[in-house]
Image 1 (cartoon, rainbow, N blue to C red):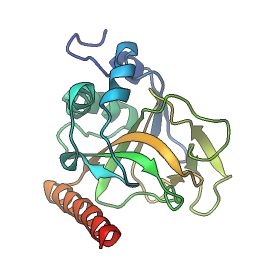
Image 2 (image 1 turned 135 degrees about the vertical axis):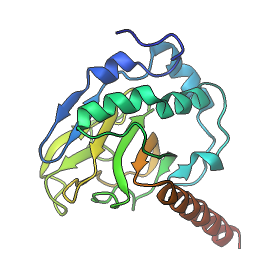
Image 3 (image 1 turned 120 degrees about the horizontal axis):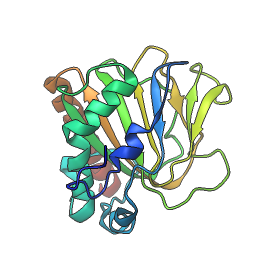
Image 4 (image 1 turned 45 degrees about the vertical axis):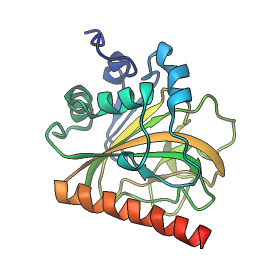
Length: 214
């Protein structure tokens, strides 16, 4: 089945071709999920974020191809494919999208995600990445050792990683400081969880700004 004509950013055929794994937890990895003609526009239209951290989409200016990418991600087609890959029904679950452009040294610490999250998907949008381990996402077998990994994902444009949240869904990346563009979509248990996380994210960034300029 070809990617529908209305899709100008996501290559659904590449998402369908993603490799699904079940150990150490349920996850999927895809490549080339961004259509070739969308790469340059997405680079130009990426929000002008000047601080580290993930920002709720509502707190950012979303225009052009970047706005199109977010709408395509939130559509039912992607949720259906990821549901099949992760063996869980996500289609009707509430979603939240957050965006990061800059990474700080404290980011990427090993974690599993909170229990309010059902599954998380990451789409990377970096032109290239160096060969070092810094900033490369790792699927980990435990919560203490970055070197005990099952997979390592380079955050280059078109790479996609999604996983089903579990008590052992350990992941993270070694410290990296600089530009590391990623769009994160999370399926949550309830709309109340979505609103709480959005409020917490917005308040956190407002507080950081106040402290910075105070």
